[in-house]
Length: 495
Ligand code: NAD
Image 1 (tube, protein in one colour):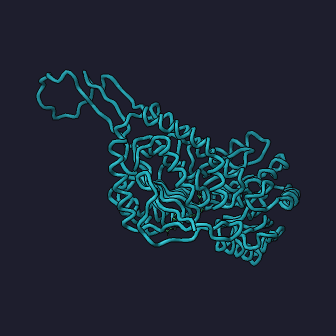
Image 2 (image 1 turned 180 degrees about the vertical axis):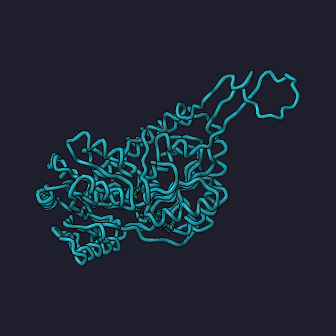
Image 3 (image 1 turned 135 degrees about the vertical axis):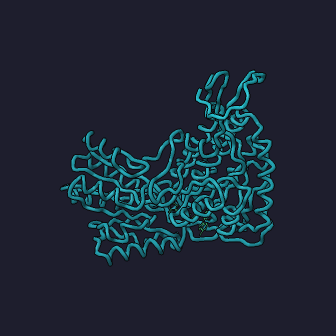
């Protein structure tokens, strides 16, 4: 059985004899074992990260940028292999996996501009013969803890920018699909990154807690479920770390009566069922405004029935399995709850079987109508291929639904009315908003992050926010020549 180790100081390494099975969700078979690292593994990782950071911080931003530029080319040459690794352990289709690697690659591309991004500000003569400038300096050792649903893209939101800024980075990927992070680290070494600047440590809560308690780790970037995000935020802050912790979501897509219905349906189908609904920007709630509801539900239903649910090895697959048996059971329990709560089940994805893959964790596209805001299936994140239609009388009611929900990651409106669209983008209490676009994921040179229970902390990920998160601001005030003798001043200088 293949064993997945840590990647420490440029090589595969682990001391711990604890391990966990990694499965192919399409077959339900165990395909590898991943090490669950021990304190010894962690200490070795930390030592490597601390040592390597000193020289790396002194490496010029231009030299760092050139290594990132090599890395970009090497990733481009390895996209197919990276995508296969993602698909096999996660279950998403190959095209979707490729797309996710490319979205990560765009962050590397952005980070190549680090000499420009780190430029500070300068003011001459802030006082007589006194100049002042500000610069951004690296934090030291930064850590990232990532979820199973994007094993390439989400880590790549973090480490390319952290490393470009002169930090070393320790990644603790999800134990459910850990292979991709190792490949990403190997490729970075191939690009010329010095050993120890990017280390990967495998493990579970035990390693997370060591990261949170370590006095040598300056910052924690987290993406995952809301309860864990809150825990990470609180523990990191308690231990004096800079922290950004992105949590779960329940994204609403509002369909106005004047919307292009077919476009809206395409949006709901792709964003609701793509990647089996295991995306933090998945559309899990469709809000049908006014008298379009029946038409909208019928169209979503007929399109959902056409979807091909199949393993990632099938090129025609629209969506694959969910990550684990436990998660499949959880989703199916939510469907049962929805029925018990009185929602109308239009399409039922439970007990979905594919010939030859009977042990795979497949859930078919599921559609509920007449969902109301007091139902558990509306309030909680299901993280599966389940779309809930809520009917709203008018735009105000739809906006209120979006704003009253506990999560605030993404939302979208489909309309042909510019005034409504402007009102929506201005007044939604949500981090990422789309207009006639189903998944408004910001590009690498903008920043990704939600509001409310979808993000704990002040910084979103990547873009300028990423550079600010991974650097500390220093402002220098300097007077030359130094031979002026004016005696001590006891009053705050004002010019
Ligand atoms: P998760 O919270 O279970 O795990 C995320 C990471 O935290 C993993 O590395 C895991 O090992 C670690 N972890 C799990 N339980 C822990 C605990 N009790 N203490 C310390 N560490 C712990 O999330 P997941 O199931 O891997 O991913 C799915 C979740 O991630 C969904 O809620 C989804 O919405 C969210 N997500 C959010 C975003 C975003 O940008 N907001 C992006 C992707 C995924």
